[in-house]
Image (cartoon, rainbow over all chains, first blue to last red; front, side, top):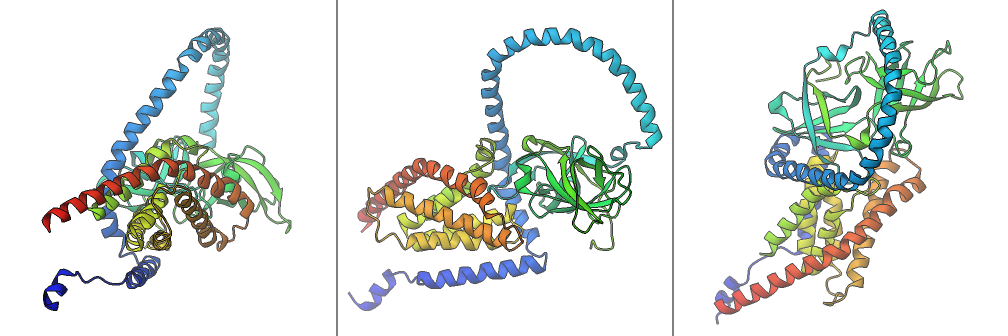
Amino acid sequence: MSPLVKRKKERYSLPTKYILLILTLICVILMILSFTTNILSAPLNFIGGYSIVPFQKGLTSASSYFVNRTANLKKMEELTEENEKLRAQVDELLSDNTNLQQDKYELAQLRELFDLNSEYEEYDKVGAHIIASDPGNWYSSFVIDKGAKDGIQVDCNVIAGSGLVGRVTSVGPNYSKVISIISDNVNTSAMMLASEDNLIVTGNLETMKNGVIEYSQLADSDEKVGVGDKVVTSNISDKYLPGILIGYIDTINTDSNNLTKSGTLIPVVDFKHLEEVLVIKQVKLSPYSE
Amino acid sequence: MRIIASGVFCIVSFILQSTLFSQFNIGGIVPNLLLIVTATIGFIIGRKYGMVTGFVAGLLTDIFFGSVIGFYALMYMYIGYLNGTFKKILYPGDFKLPLLLIVGSDVIYSHAVYFFMFFIQGQFHYAFYLKKVILPEVVYTTVIACILYPIMKFFFNKIDKWEQKVTGESV
């Protein structure tokens, strides 16, 4: 029972307080590093991409299967009822359809006049599934299952259906992070499609509960902008490609300076039910981007 | 053994939180599983484990969803550490204090996130965030904690017994 033997048995361990201090320091250093440089994101994204993402992919597809299943069972009864109602509606709609057919031709002609020429189709896009969303309740960012391997870069624009969803903020080998335009404090440079007046669209968690987001600094001296007008991404934005539809004007208020206007707009994308998105591979080049 | 169990709890809860619970959310609110795991490991095993678990949990959140790497790691770490200091007061079989600790942790955590991420950036609608984000999250987290805490306690008790048996036999 010599003290030497005893010492060997006892494992030496740092007091907890020191470990806390060291880890705190590490956190602070990490924060400073990630604020100022971009060194950290590549290795960390690599680790995350191969350890966590495969699980997220599997679980999301499995759970969405169950969500769909339970919804299906519930709807079975409702559907038979609905079916009868719908049959009656079909007759009504058939007559409406002929009218709409006529409107369609008119629309095609008007589109040519406006020279809208649906610009997005020219961009090279890649489809992606959303496999995870922010675990907190504060932001609306999410993770998609395509990454650097599929040609996605940071600042790639993300669209769904016909409207803007957001942009890629960081890329791993097989996944990427997307921040949406409705997130708090995310500003998007936009313009009115008709009058080409510039405005700033600001994401807001508070107003998004009512399905709208805010815009401000709209210089509309000629009083041309009205409710329901289209808002698209601006050609002076340094992150977004020009001409992607964001939403429609909902309310207009004149600011107290009497020069600019602000209000709310309704995004075209249904952010609550996003499952698949399209990522435009082309990135807007600007003097500000590295 | 405890290290492996803590790591597994941490990673599984992160994956569940970002996938399954995000899909089955109630009114857009997701329970904070990582916080439950961090706090529970803190007051069941001790300060050191709670601290390291919190660090790992926070780092995972940072890598995938944070704008600044290290922020969530720091917060979860301190939650784990502070909960660990209650280990001495806690006696086995008590259910109220652990639950109270988890609720308290979530309230503090939510307010810290609000303060550092929103208040500083000029979002002063405290009442709105309290009503729509903080309170629902706390309630939902408490409900999940009632289920998750006994499960975790059961596992760690099993591990304790198993380890006692192993060390007892070897000595």
